[in-house]
Amino acid sequence: MDIQLKRGLLDVCVLAAIKNEDSYGYKIIKDMSPYLELSESTLYTILKRLETAGMLTVRSVEHEGRLRKYYHITGKGIERIEEFREDWKEILSIYHFIVREESHE
Image (cartoon, one colour):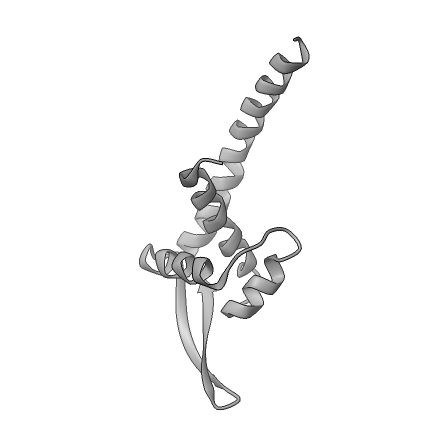
């Protein structure tokens, strides 16, 4: 898969994982695991990129004597999910075109 496409898809997946409630790294990975495999290092790179882009905010909370970072989606992050939903319609259309062409061979 094209690296830029995959990067964009993973960004939206992480945003979707925290859309309904704030979450932390381990839980995000756990919530996503039935759908895709994501390493901690990849996740934290994505989270930092999304924070820098203003699509999420971070707050630290003490949990069992350690600080845990919780991630919260912003309005800009929600807009990105909505943009993806619109983009997906076009992607599906392209996919159907490709499959249609293959079925005629």
